[in-house]
Length: 468
Image (tube, rainbow, N blue to C red; front, side):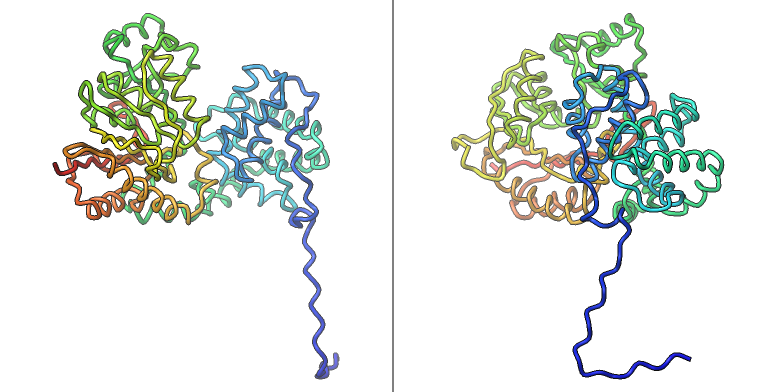
């Protein structure tokens, strides 16, 4: 029988720190080798898998997916356009199914994998569990090429055997593993739990449809430049090129099958631009007339700036705090042969303003972008719950600042691509009270929608007029 411990007046010894497995001990984790170049063939699935996995591992450290992919491509000079396209497709697939893939990995892996190993498994499992059964590879090919990819990179080589075992086990026990994993809401819906809870609270009747829509690949929607074509004329041009398309808005045309912009008829000549159908509502709502002085605040990448100028000969200023992103506005204007003043400045401060009031102001303010996750599936994993309040506070400051620049009788259009009422309707209502703004008719909250008649992201519109 064990003796009971005797009491002591001495200071108790500090308990030993718990021993973490190597995969969980921060100090033992090697730095991700994002610059490593494998000797894999650029036209192989293994090459694309390790590239996509590298990008996903960077997303998990806080880098957005387009930037992460650009960094991977910059370090892989032998990557062909086809290889880059394959990497992008794999990375976006994996982001849309990350909750499910990570839940499956946790059920099968003996310990928490290192970041690149986890990302590589997520890429492979996303291909093997494609919900629409459109995976472009046979399962045995996916397993073989994933193991080959693992062996070609120093961050994954030691886990080559484990990756092989995990993927082969999934093939043997697929349904049982999926049934278990999908009991977890994060795995079932592929969003963080706080996001799922937020959508349920904001939209209790539509929450399932909203979450599901964010996991679907987005359509390729074009905005027809009516300075050069009517929508009917452009649809005829697409038909002649063998491209099926449907009109889904006053200026919006949705291609049945997405293609690269270099293949879109008339794109290089400015006949069309790529823009979501919901985003195409902004310029008409502003009701810009010829000669008006117009400000597009937070303008990059310039889709709405260009649409305003396609509809009216106005004096437009495009404002953005990021000079690099503002340069993209200039590129779009050049392609469309349009002119606007580009001003790199922060919309929440007035120091850039010359004091001359604007007749119209478009305020597409910063937000969590929760309404465009089908186009940017990494957003859900990058955002934190606290971001909503921080961004709503910033947007409120921007709106109040811009209101001082609006001429009496002028209109300000508040736009956000958020689904959270704190960033949309609550923001609009509070703004109207603070500034005694007259609220005019506008669509309000557009929930993400897809179908034969409409197909758009989740955006919010509120239109205000200043008393004369």
